[in-house]
Each structure stands twice: as structure tokens, then as C-alpha cells.
Image 1 (cartoon, helix red, strand yellow):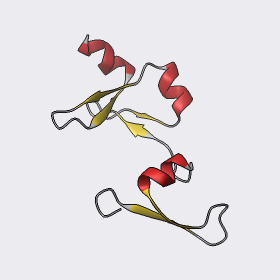
Image 2 (image 1 turned 180 degrees about the vertical axis):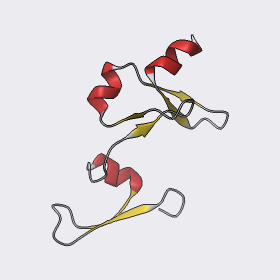
Image 3 (image 1 turned 120 degrees about the vertical axis):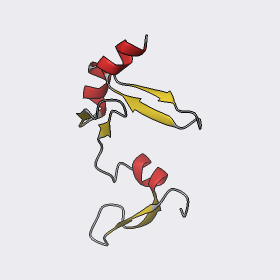
Image 4 (image 1 turned 60 degrees about the vertical axis):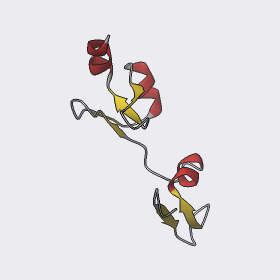
Length: 76
């Protein structure tokens, strides 16, 4: 949790407690959005991301980074 961060879900939530960001994401506790690292475009949900050709490519450190459909097409 110290490397990636954490989120706190209030006692009134469906899944209360403190969770690492990976677990919180898996439990769908976080608002989902992705910003393209090349142009800054934002997509609000996974369905739209897939529909519009968003892809994730590793950076020089091996971390996956999001790229919108337009920037993905330009990479080819």
C-alpha cells in the first residue's frame, strides 16, 4: 500500500474499510477514467475505451500506459 497508495471506503459503503488501490480497483470502488499519455484525451469507462481503440503499452520502466485510439493508430 505504501508503494501504490490506498483508498478509504466509509462505513456506510457497500464495502467499508481501507484498501490498496489494486484491490479497490478490483472491487470497483474507484471512479474509472483513463487519460492518454500522448495527447491527454480522457475516456470515462471501459466500454468506451474498447469501442474507440484505446490500448495500453509499456513505458521504459515496463509500466503499462494508456493511449487513445488515435495515438495508438499513429504508433503503427
